[in-house]
Image 1 (tube, rainbow, N blue to C red):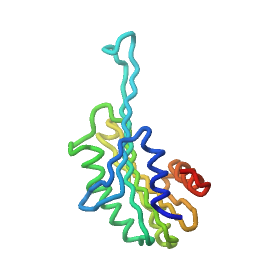
Image 2: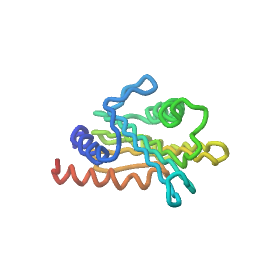
Image 3: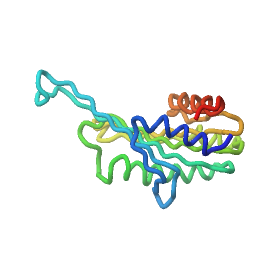
Length: 181
């Protein structure tokens, strides 16, 4: 399966509610795309000035296409970009801490490989973990989700945090296989 067809179909799922930058430059590396989603929920009484509570939630998805399958060292390199650049520059926007009403931010790395992936790569993705709590959890947390799509074998692998995200990537696989544009 062609990674470009899969990538374009994946972007169509995201473009309805995410802001998409393509290509994206982060940590000195160029990526296929960066999709960002922001939502604010509030509860107030009669007027908006009488807000009882408010929470901000975010998701940032960094996507990369590969013609040949990447190795486990690529997962380590991308993990470093996530912790050293994506979390502080994209999630916190260079600030020392998250804003007061921040609840959570998901930082997702989506790796799309046209060639079959190695067992070592799958294990590296499954072992990947990153969670950061802000102000003893009073200002929420950020969690990394890693998704590896093996287009040759039509399989999706994730780390533990990315299990729910796998459903979307499986649906896109089914759409591309069925010939939906």
